[in-house]
Amino acid sequence: MTAPLPGVPGVTPDERGASRAHWLKAVGHARGPLPEDWLERRPELLRRTGFPRRPRIAPGDRLVLYASVWRCVFALAEATGEPEPREHPRWPWTIAIEPLIVVPVLDAAPPVEAIGVAARSMSQQSHIRLRAEHYARAIEAIASIAA
Image (cartoon, rainbow, N blue to C red; front, side, top):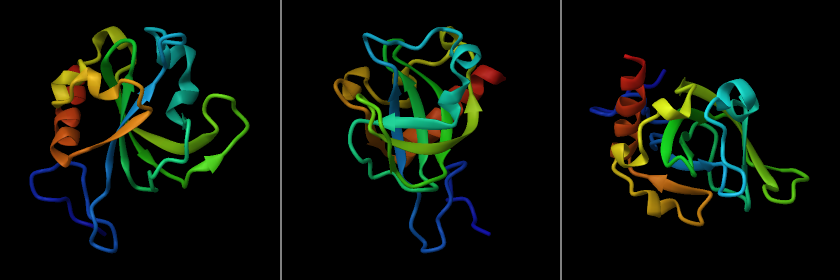
């Protein structure tokens, strides 16, 4: 059993004592944005996510899912597997994920700036590493929608 890191909800050290990594993961793109009712129309997004190159994300890492065209954060997830190759022209790598908290309608999701990250940081990126404080702000911002 691991104990939470002081001051950062949901972040725990692994058995080696190292902290989980946190990532902002883009979902959708300019030519293929997510629909506003993404959860109803694309529930598979909560099970696997794709990458153009082999990501350094490891099991146990936490992801903040970012709707790129909408410029909002709409879910927190945990990576549950290692990166795996697949036959897909745009996203040849994939990782299994488990949802932790979700905003079902994108119009209600908080802007990415609410977690302290500028939208331009994700320009031409499939994912970027976050600091623990950005992940903690993502928890607060997304949880506030449900409150």
